[in-house]
Amino acid sequence: MINEQENTRISKLLSLVLRHQPEHIGIELDEHGWTDVNTLIAKSQKKGVNLTPGILKYVVNTNVKKRFAFNNDLTKIRASQGHSVEVDLLYTPQIPPVLLYHGTGTQSVNSILQNGLQKMTRHHVHLSADQDTAIKVGRRHGKPAVLCIDAKQMAGQGYTFFQSANGVWLTEHVPAKYISLATGE
Image (cartoon, rainbow, N blue to C red):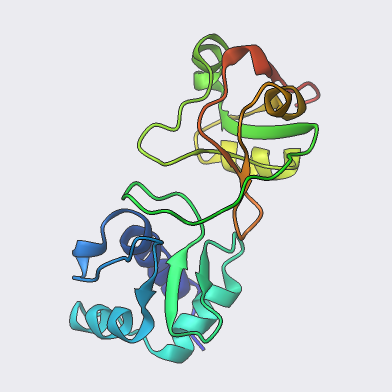
Protein backbone atom coordinates (compact mmCIF):
# COMPACT_ATOMS: atom_id res chain seq x y z
CA MET A 1 0.00 0.00 0.00
CA ILE A 2 2.64 2.57 1.10
CA ASN A 3 6.32 2.19 1.89
CA GLU A 4 7.64 2.16 5.45
CA GLN A 5 9.12 5.65 5.16
CA GLU A 6 5.76 7.12 4.12
CA ASN A 7 3.99 5.13 6.83
CA THR A 8 6.35 6.62 9.44
CA ARG A 9 5.93 10.13 8.02
CA ILE A 10 2.12 9.91 8.18
CA SER A 11 2.22 8.35 11.65
CA LYS A 12 4.37 11.25 12.90
CA LEU A 13 1.98 13.74 11.34
CA LEU A 14 -0.97 12.02 13.03
CA SER A 15 0.85 12.09 16.38
CA LEU A 16 1.48 15.80 15.95
CA VAL A 17 -2.04 16.82 14.93
CA LEU A 18 -4.03 14.35 17.07
CA ARG A 19 -1.99 14.88 20.25
CA HIS A 20 -0.38 18.31 20.21
CA GLN A 21 -1.09 20.70 17.33
CA PRO A 22 -4.37 20.10 15.48
CA GLU A 23 -4.06 23.63 14.09
CA HIS A 24 -0.95 22.52 12.14
CA ILE A 25 -3.28 21.27 9.40
CA GLY A 26 -6.39 23.18 10.46
CA ILE A 27 -8.41 20.47 12.20
CA GLU A 28 -10.21 20.62 15.53
CA LEU A 29 -10.42 17.96 18.22
CA ASP A 30 -13.63 17.60 20.19
CA GLU A 31 -13.58 17.46 24.00
CA HIS A 32 -12.73 13.73 23.86
CA GLY A 33 -9.92 14.07 21.31
CA TRP A 34 -11.88 12.90 18.25
CA THR A 35 -11.77 14.54 14.84
CA ASP A 36 -13.67 13.77 11.66
CA VAL A 37 -11.80 11.35 9.38
CA ASN A 38 -12.89 13.04 6.14
CA THR A 39 -11.82 16.46 7.42
CA LEU A 40 -8.45 15.05 8.55
CA ILE A 41 -7.87 13.52 5.12
CA ALA A 42 -8.93 16.66 3.22
CA LYS A 43 -6.83 19.00 5.40
CA SER A 44 -3.81 16.66 5.15
CA GLN A 45 -4.10 16.59 1.36
CA LYS A 46 -4.17 20.40 1.26
CA LYS A 47 -0.83 20.27 3.11
CA GLY A 48 0.59 17.95 0.44
CA VAL A 49 0.21 14.67 2.32
CA ASN A 50 -1.00 11.76 0.19
CA LEU A 51 -3.65 10.54 2.64
CA THR A 52 -6.65 8.49 1.56
CA PRO A 53 -9.15 6.48 3.64
CA GLY A 54 -7.27 3.29 2.75
CA ILE A 55 -3.87 4.71 3.65
CA LEU A 56 -5.23 6.10 6.94
CA LYS A 57 -6.67 2.69 7.89
CA TYR A 58 -3.37 1.05 6.97
CA VAL A 59 -1.33 3.48 9.10
CA VAL A 60 -3.67 3.06 12.08
CA ASN A 61 -3.80 -0.74 11.79
CA THR A 62 -0.05 -1.22 11.32
CA ASN A 63 1.09 1.20 14.02
CA VAL A 64 3.03 -1.07 16.37
CA LYS A 65 2.23 1.08 19.39
CA LYS A 66 -1.48 1.34 18.46
CA ARG A 67 -1.29 5.09 19.05
CA PHE A 68 -4.49 5.85 17.15
CA ALA A 69 -8.06 4.58 17.30
CA PHE A 70 -11.16 4.89 15.17
CA ASN A 71 -14.64 5.13 16.59
CA ASN A 72 -17.01 2.20 15.90
CA ASP A 73 -18.18 3.40 12.48
CA LEU A 74 -14.72 4.64 11.38
CA THR A 75 -15.92 8.22 10.93
CA LYS A 76 -13.72 9.68 13.69
CA ILE A 77 -10.14 9.16 14.80
CA ARG A 78 -8.09 10.12 17.86
CA ALA A 79 -4.80 9.45 19.58
CA SER A 80 -5.03 6.88 22.38
CA GLN A 81 -2.96 8.94 24.86
CA GLY A 82 -0.07 11.39 25.07
CA HIS A 83 -1.97 14.61 24.47
CA SER A 84 -0.60 18.00 25.41
CA VAL A 85 -3.86 19.67 24.33
CA GLU A 86 -6.83 19.58 26.68
CA VAL A 87 -9.01 16.51 26.07
CA ASP A 88 -10.91 14.04 28.24
CA LEU A 89 -10.44 10.54 26.84
CA LEU A 90 -13.13 9.21 29.20
CA TYR A 91 -10.95 6.42 30.54
CA THR A 92 -12.30 4.85 33.71
CA PRO A 93 -10.05 4.10 36.68
CA GLN A 94 -8.49 0.63 36.62
CA ILE A 95 -6.72 -1.51 39.19
CA PRO A 96 -3.11 -1.73 37.99
CA PRO A 97 -0.85 -4.76 38.17
CA VAL A 98 1.42 -5.02 41.21
CA LEU A 99 4.35 -3.55 39.29
CA LEU A 100 4.51 -1.20 36.33
CA TYR A 101 7.58 0.04 34.50
CA HIS A 102 8.87 3.30 33.09
CA GLY A 103 11.61 3.51 30.48
CA THR A 104 13.92 6.50 30.40
CA GLY A 105 17.50 7.43 29.59
CA THR A 106 20.16 6.75 32.21
CA GLN A 107 20.86 10.49 32.45
CA SER A 108 17.39 11.02 33.98
CA VAL A 109 17.45 8.28 36.61
CA ASN A 110 18.90 10.23 39.54
CA SER A 111 16.48 13.12 39.09
CA ILE A 112 13.50 10.75 38.83
CA LEU A 113 14.57 8.75 41.89
CA GLN A 114 14.80 12.03 43.79
CA ASN A 115 11.75 13.91 42.42
CA GLY A 116 9.43 11.21 41.08
CA LEU A 117 7.86 11.00 37.65
CA GLN A 118 6.10 14.14 36.43
CA LYS A 119 3.64 14.29 33.55
CA MET A 120 5.38 17.40 32.19
CA THR A 121 3.35 18.76 29.23
CA ARG A 122 1.21 15.64 28.89
CA HIS A 123 -1.94 14.71 30.77
CA HIS A 124 -0.41 11.68 32.46
CA VAL A 125 2.76 9.79 33.24
CA HIS A 126 3.02 6.81 30.86
CA LEU A 127 3.85 3.39 32.29
CA SER A 128 4.11 -0.07 30.76
CA ALA A 129 3.14 -3.49 32.06
CA ASP A 130 6.41 -5.12 30.98
CA GLN A 131 10.10 -4.34 31.08
CA ASP A 132 10.68 -5.01 27.36
CA THR A 133 8.35 -2.16 26.40
CA ALA A 134 10.00 0.09 28.98
CA ILE A 135 13.44 -0.69 27.50
CA LYS A 136 12.20 0.26 24.01
CA VAL A 137 10.82 3.54 25.37
CA GLY A 138 14.06 4.21 27.25
CA ARG A 139 16.13 3.77 24.08
CA ARG A 140 14.45 6.85 22.62
CA HIS A 141 16.23 8.81 25.37
CA GLY A 142 19.73 7.37 24.97
CA LYS A 143 21.08 4.44 26.95
CA PRO A 144 17.93 2.92 28.48
CA ALA A 145 17.14 2.49 32.15
CA VAL A 146 14.02 0.81 33.50
CA LEU A 147 12.29 2.00 36.64
CA CYS A 148 9.94 -0.23 38.65
CA ILE A 149 6.80 1.40 39.97
CA ASP A 150 5.04 -0.09 43.01
CA ALA A 151 1.61 0.40 41.47
CA LYS A 152 -0.14 -1.83 44.00
CA GLN A 153 1.02 0.32 46.89
CA MET A 154 0.21 3.52 45.01
CA ALA A 155 -3.32 2.32 44.21
CA GLY A 156 -3.75 1.23 47.83
CA GLN A 157 -2.89 4.74 48.93
CA GLY A 158 -5.45 6.37 46.66
CA TYR A 159 -3.58 7.06 43.42
CA THR A 160 -5.71 6.61 40.32
CA PHE A 161 -4.62 4.61 37.29
CA PHE A 162 -6.12 4.39 33.82
CA GLN A 163 -5.32 2.08 30.94
CA SER A 164 -5.45 3.55 27.44
CA ALA A 165 -6.95 1.75 24.47
CA ASN A 166 -3.47 0.57 23.44
CA GLY A 167 -2.52 -0.81 26.86
CA VAL A 168 -0.43 2.06 28.20
CA TRP A 169 -0.95 2.66 31.92
CA LEU A 170 -1.54 6.29 32.91
CA THR A 171 -1.41 8.16 36.21
CA GLU A 172 -1.07 11.80 37.24
CA HIS A 173 2.26 11.56 39.08
CA VAL A 174 4.52 8.92 40.60
CA PRO A 175 6.16 10.05 43.84
CA ALA A 176 9.78 8.98 44.28
CA LYS A 177 8.99 6.65 47.21
CA TYR A 178 7.20 4.26 44.80
CA ILE A 179 10.09 4.08 42.31
CA SER A 180 13.11 1.81 42.22
CA LEU A 181 15.69 1.03 39.56
CA ALA A 182 15.06 -2.33 37.85
CA THR A 183 17.89 -4.80 38.18
CA GLY A 184 19.30 -7.02 35.45
CA GLU A 185 19.67 -4.33 32.78
